[in-house]
Amino acid sequence: MIFDAQNTFCDKATLVGIGTGVQNGNVIVNGGGNASNPMWVYAQIENPAAGVLEVTLLSDTTTVATFTLNTASAVKKMKLPYEANGKEFKLTYKATTAFSSGVFTAALVADVDLP
Image (cartoon, rainbow, N blue to C red; front, side, top):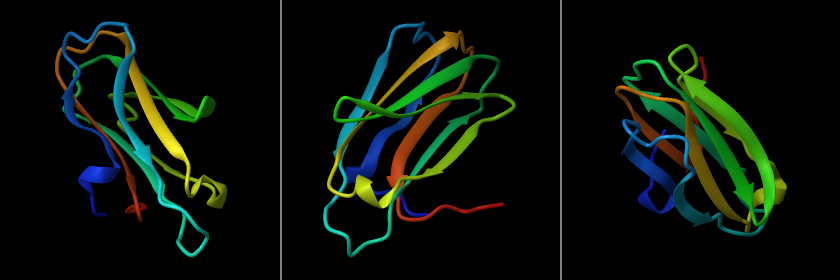
């Protein structure tokens, strides 16, 4: 799996003290055309101590997905549909319960390591 800075919503953003207010990741425009494979959304919290993170992926003004990450489920891998090519994506996140440690990384990637 290769991370590209142009396709990264946030890179090791601290989760300590973010509270329940919505945090915004970078906005990404996902290429175009139908000649490429669909991208994957990869999201991970590293070294979390307690806390629950609610993550929302938006395309234009439409919610594509909402999911939670926590100590028991710290990684999310989700394939985008072909129709996602050429779209603009925005990722938002907020803590629904406080974190005492941890960082958050989220990006669009070409492939993921599946278990």
